[in-house]
Length: 104
Image (tube, rainbow, N blue to C red; front, side):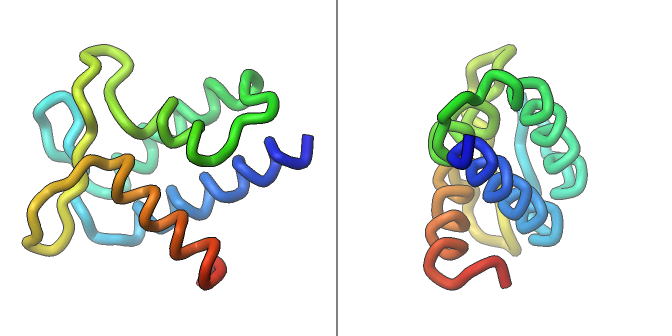
């Protein structure tokens, strides 16, 4: 139970970071704002939350934020003129920073 709460709490912080990042988020070939990305991923998180059991944050990222459940195509994140990268890599880097430095 503690693991689920922890993963859920970390995902909440990660989605907040995405929303405030100013980055763009590509889903199924279309670029969206970070706010729209957060809303989309939050809906997916809310849907699977009862099924998480003892999932880690890394597993949750893979389940909801790595690729489209419809097309199977990887989501992309593009920040401030840099090249896009897979959203899972971006979120995992944010997770590492969160764990190392805390939520601030």
